[in-house]
Image 1 (cartoon, rainbow, N blue to C red):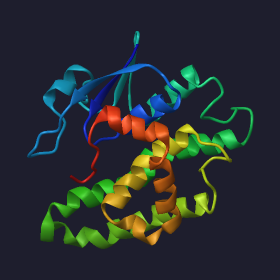
Image 2: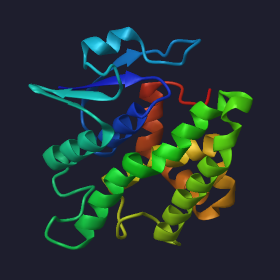
Image 3: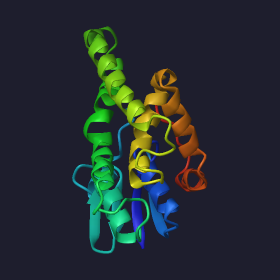
Length: 208
Protein backbone atom coordinates (compact mmCIF):
# COMPACT_ATOMS: atom_id res chain seq x y z
CA UNK A 1 0.00 0.00 0.00
CA UNK A 2 1.10 3.55 -0.69
CA UNK A 3 2.36 5.40 2.38
CA UNK A 4 2.55 9.18 2.66
CA UNK A 5 4.79 10.76 5.28
CA UNK A 6 2.59 13.76 5.99
CA UNK A 7 3.62 16.91 7.85
CA UNK A 8 0.82 19.14 9.08
CA UNK A 9 0.33 22.46 7.24
CA UNK A 10 2.70 21.51 4.45
CA UNK A 11 3.06 20.59 0.81
CA UNK A 12 2.20 16.98 1.58
CA UNK A 13 -1.49 17.92 1.80
CA UNK A 14 -1.67 18.18 -1.98
CA UNK A 15 -0.30 14.63 -2.32
CA UNK A 16 -3.19 13.35 -0.24
CA UNK A 17 -5.51 15.30 -2.55
CA UNK A 18 -3.91 13.72 -5.62
CA UNK A 19 -4.40 10.22 -4.20
CA UNK A 20 -8.02 11.01 -3.39
CA UNK A 21 -8.62 12.25 -6.95
CA UNK A 22 -7.50 8.84 -8.21
CA UNK A 23 -9.43 7.00 -5.47
CA UNK A 24 -6.29 5.14 -4.39
CA UNK A 25 -5.83 3.34 -1.09
CA UNK A 26 -3.07 4.83 1.04
CA UNK A 27 -1.80 5.10 4.58
CA UNK A 28 -0.86 8.38 6.24
CA UNK A 29 2.06 8.58 8.65
CA UNK A 30 1.60 11.81 10.59
CA UNK A 31 4.24 14.29 11.72
CA UNK A 32 3.75 17.55 13.63
CA UNK A 33 5.76 20.75 13.30
CA UNK A 34 7.64 22.08 16.30
CA UNK A 35 5.29 24.61 17.92
CA UNK A 36 8.03 27.22 18.36
CA UNK A 37 10.28 26.84 15.31
CA UNK A 38 7.52 25.60 12.95
CA UNK A 39 10.10 23.17 11.53
CA UNK A 40 9.59 19.49 10.77
CA UNK A 41 10.52 17.03 13.53
CA UNK A 42 13.86 15.23 13.53
CA UNK A 43 12.00 11.94 13.09
CA UNK A 44 11.45 12.75 9.40
CA UNK A 45 15.21 12.40 8.84
CA UNK A 46 14.79 8.69 9.50
CA UNK A 47 12.57 8.59 6.42
CA UNK A 48 14.67 10.81 4.14
CA UNK A 49 18.04 12.52 4.81
CA UNK A 50 16.58 15.96 4.12
CA UNK A 51 13.98 15.55 6.84
CA UNK A 52 11.29 17.07 4.63
CA UNK A 53 7.73 16.17 3.72
CA UNK A 54 6.16 14.85 1.58
CA UNK A 55 7.83 11.50 1.12
CA UNK A 56 5.89 8.76 -0.64
CA UNK A 57 6.61 5.05 -0.29
CA UNK A 58 5.15 2.47 -2.63
CA UNK A 59 6.69 -0.95 -2.13
CA UNK A 60 10.39 -0.58 -2.89
CA UNK A 61 9.89 2.94 -4.26
CA UNK A 62 10.63 5.93 -2.04
CA UNK A 63 10.26 9.43 -3.50
CA UNK A 64 10.63 12.93 -2.07
CA UNK A 65 9.78 16.21 -3.85
CA UNK A 66 6.15 16.96 -4.68
CA UNK A 67 6.69 17.30 -8.43
CA UNK A 68 8.41 13.93 -8.65
CA UNK A 69 5.69 12.34 -6.52
CA UNK A 70 2.93 13.76 -8.72
CA UNK A 71 4.70 12.49 -11.85
CA UNK A 72 5.18 9.02 -10.34
CA UNK A 73 1.61 8.65 -9.10
CA UNK A 74 0.02 9.90 -12.33
CA UNK A 75 2.33 7.75 -14.48
CA UNK A 76 1.85 4.63 -12.35
CA UNK A 77 -1.80 4.85 -11.37
CA UNK A 78 -3.39 7.53 -13.55
CA UNK A 79 -4.47 5.18 -16.35
CA UNK A 80 -4.61 8.11 -18.74
CA UNK A 81 -6.09 10.52 -16.19
CA UNK A 82 -4.61 13.74 -14.75
CA UNK A 83 -2.05 14.29 -17.53
CA UNK A 84 -2.26 14.88 -21.27
CA UNK A 85 -0.72 12.38 -23.63
CA UNK A 86 3.04 12.78 -23.96
CA UNK A 87 2.56 12.70 -27.74
CA UNK A 88 0.76 16.06 -27.93
CA UNK A 89 2.16 19.60 -27.44
CA UNK A 90 -0.05 20.18 -24.39
CA UNK A 91 2.10 17.71 -22.48
CA UNK A 92 5.06 20.11 -22.54
CA UNK A 93 2.90 22.82 -20.96
CA UNK A 94 1.83 20.32 -18.31
CA UNK A 95 5.41 19.40 -17.43
CA UNK A 96 6.51 23.04 -17.41
CA UNK A 97 3.78 24.10 -14.99
CA UNK A 98 4.27 21.02 -12.84
CA UNK A 99 7.87 22.02 -12.15
CA UNK A 100 7.42 25.78 -12.38
CA UNK A 101 5.33 25.69 -9.20
CA UNK A 102 8.28 24.83 -6.98
CA UNK A 103 11.14 25.78 -9.27
CA UNK A 104 10.15 29.45 -9.58
CA UNK A 105 6.74 30.48 -8.27
CA UNK A 106 7.25 29.45 -4.65
CA UNK A 107 10.63 31.18 -4.22
CA UNK A 108 9.43 34.77 -3.60
CA UNK A 109 6.60 33.52 -1.40
CA UNK A 110 9.03 31.57 0.78
CA UNK A 111 11.44 34.50 0.87
CA UNK A 112 8.60 36.75 1.95
CA UNK A 113 7.77 34.38 4.79
CA UNK A 114 11.32 34.16 6.13
CA UNK A 115 12.34 37.78 5.55
CA UNK A 116 9.13 38.93 7.21
CA UNK A 117 10.33 37.34 10.42
CA UNK A 118 13.41 39.57 10.39
CA UNK A 119 11.41 42.74 10.93
CA UNK A 120 13.30 45.92 10.11
CA UNK A 121 16.44 43.95 9.22
CA UNK A 122 14.66 42.38 6.27
CA UNK A 123 12.87 45.54 5.11
CA UNK A 124 15.36 46.38 2.29
CA UNK A 125 14.46 43.11 0.56
CA UNK A 126 10.72 43.74 0.75
CA UNK A 127 10.24 45.65 -2.52
CA UNK A 128 12.13 43.08 -4.59
CA UNK A 129 10.25 40.18 -3.01
CA UNK A 130 6.92 41.90 -3.61
CA UNK A 131 7.88 42.64 -7.20
CA UNK A 132 8.79 39.03 -7.88
CA UNK A 133 5.63 37.78 -6.18
CA UNK A 134 3.52 40.00 -8.41
CA UNK A 135 5.56 38.93 -11.43
CA UNK A 136 4.91 35.24 -10.89
CA UNK A 137 1.29 35.52 -9.83
CA UNK A 138 0.65 37.86 -12.74
CA UNK A 139 2.13 35.32 -15.12
CA UNK A 140 -0.04 32.53 -13.72
CA UNK A 141 -3.12 34.74 -13.86
CA UNK A 142 -2.40 35.34 -17.54
CA UNK A 143 -1.83 31.64 -18.25
CA UNK A 144 -5.10 30.69 -16.55
CA UNK A 145 -7.17 33.52 -18.00
CA UNK A 146 -10.83 32.58 -17.80
CA UNK A 147 -10.15 28.85 -18.11
CA UNK A 148 -11.32 26.38 -15.49
CA UNK A 149 -7.99 24.52 -15.34
CA UNK A 150 -4.38 25.27 -16.19
CA UNK A 151 -3.78 22.59 -18.82
CA UNK A 152 -6.40 22.18 -21.49
CA UNK A 153 -9.97 21.69 -20.37
CA UNK A 154 -9.42 18.96 -17.77
CA UNK A 155 -8.10 18.70 -14.24
CA UNK A 156 -4.46 17.50 -14.13
CA UNK A 157 -1.57 16.94 -11.76
CA UNK A 158 -0.40 20.47 -12.58
CA UNK A 159 -3.50 21.82 -10.84
CA UNK A 160 -2.62 19.78 -7.77
CA UNK A 161 0.96 21.01 -7.79
CA UNK A 162 0.06 24.67 -8.31
CA UNK A 163 -2.50 24.64 -5.51
CA UNK A 164 0.12 25.16 -2.80
CA UNK A 165 1.42 28.27 -4.55
CA UNK A 166 -2.02 29.86 -4.43
CA UNK A 167 -2.71 28.75 -0.89
CA UNK A 168 0.58 30.29 0.23
CA UNK A 169 -0.19 33.48 -1.69
CA UNK A 170 -3.69 33.64 -0.21
CA UNK A 171 -2.30 33.22 3.31
CA UNK A 172 -0.27 36.39 2.76
CA UNK A 173 -3.14 38.29 1.13
CA UNK A 174 -1.52 38.39 -2.33
CA UNK A 175 -4.41 36.73 -4.19
CA UNK A 176 -6.63 39.73 -3.47
CA UNK A 177 -5.05 41.36 -6.53
CA UNK A 178 -5.71 38.38 -8.82
CA UNK A 179 -9.43 37.55 -8.74
CA UNK A 180 -9.22 34.80 -11.36
CA UNK A 181 -6.59 32.98 -9.27
CA UNK A 182 -8.70 33.35 -6.12
CA UNK A 183 -11.75 32.01 -7.97
CA UNK A 184 -9.63 29.14 -9.28
CA UNK A 185 -8.41 28.28 -5.77
CA UNK A 186 -11.98 28.35 -4.50
CA UNK A 187 -12.97 25.87 -7.22
CA UNK A 188 -10.11 23.53 -6.39
CA UNK A 189 -10.87 23.61 -2.67
CA UNK A 190 -14.52 22.81 -3.41
CA UNK A 191 -13.64 19.54 -5.15
CA UNK A 192 -14.87 16.48 -3.19
CA UNK A 193 -11.44 14.83 -3.32
CA UNK A 194 -9.82 17.97 -1.88
CA UNK A 195 -12.28 18.00 1.00
CA UNK A 196 -11.74 14.28 1.63
CA UNK A 197 -7.98 14.85 1.76
CA UNK A 198 -8.47 17.57 4.39
CA UNK A 199 -10.64 15.21 6.42
CA UNK A 200 -7.96 12.55 6.35
CA UNK A 201 -4.91 14.79 6.65
CA UNK A 202 -6.19 16.99 9.45
CA UNK A 203 -6.34 20.73 10.02
CA UNK A 204 -4.70 22.70 7.23
CA UNK A 205 -3.89 26.35 7.84
CA UNK A 206 -0.88 27.84 6.09
CA UNK A 207 0.73 30.66 8.04
CA UNK A 208 -0.69 29.36 11.31
